[in-house]
Image (cartoon, rainbow over all chains, first blue to last red):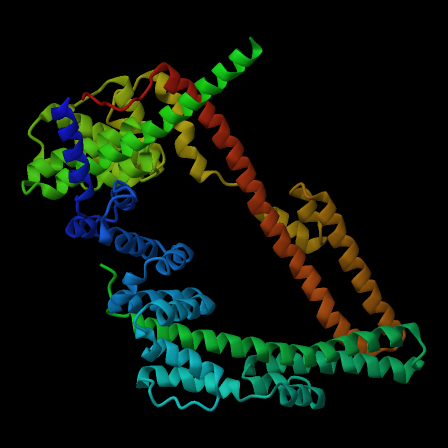
Length: 258
Length: 276
């Protein structure tokens, strides 16, 4: 009976001191053995006292783009925030996925970690796109061109675009940088304007055909103005996302998870 | 009594579920253990044995996606046992066929035939199933080189499916050019055909009416904006409907052929060869 008890005790001790083999995990990652990787991490029960288990699980979530799970778990295991390369990798990949989630990670790092991300390129870039007064001198030259492109669009005013579209249909598109749309917008408005003019000239404004052509012309004319304003908003978001994507790419290039 | 029966049923159900979960877990654990052995072993032949073990385990569990993945890790040159190699080539050909990697299936099948010279009806059937989907020339070449069992002749339909084409396609398009909507109606889409006739007819009449009222600018503009768009749009729609019709007929042919193949496979089943 005593021997049996001793054996059980030894087994418990042995299992609680089992260690994760990091080179085996690298082997699983190298050969893309995702199921085995998952099974291996799950083979260690949560009650097992292994410090690195959570760390490897977090890496696993990142590897498989399970960013929500990663964020949910990272605040519970703040020790992970001591790994600067993991933080560089995760912010770089998170930013490509969601701006708000990246901000959450930066916040988690400032609250529970060593505030490593406070001085990072990504945090500075996030501040830069939100504040026009900040200088972009910290950006490397390869990112500078993307930022200049974004800034050019950011400085454009929606009311200027709208006013130009009102004065000359298509001019608003030219102003917001959609040069190819200019001719299309201009010609369509000229065509419908001409039919409206001709019908009013021939039958007067109260004629059904005149009302129809004037209605069609008005719809196209107004939608051209609305489209210019709406398009500018979209382009601004697009350019911002593009710039931040490039920053994320720059940040995560050469940083490996394993 | 009722209470006892209900509890018994619940107990059985829970046990079945637990058993199933355990089974999946056991399979995953065994795959992990083999992978650990692969990681630890330094010898290529030994590694290859473990790869084969993983491959066979996944076949037993019908985890075919994984089987195909494990297949890519196995090397024929590390086999010591020729029977095991034969079985491996057979399984590899079959699994590659199942996951639709026909080039690999052909390579493994050829390796199997080179090694065994197997001329059994099952082997011929597998060869035909692989070659039929490659291209018609390789299918015919394969047929020429073998003295085929007559039961397998019905499989010719397999090689014909990819080459099925609708006859007189140009005729449908010409019909749409002459009378807008006619070609579309001929493809079986009568409603869209009628819609096209009515749209183009009313648009043309409207433009003509504008001309009669001396609205020459409007005639030009509306005519330019609507008539070519509707006319050529209908021709494009006819082409699209033709493609759909061709796909439909090809699918019908494929279903008939599949039924024939299924009947044949019931008579001459092709199974994995798992000797362990």
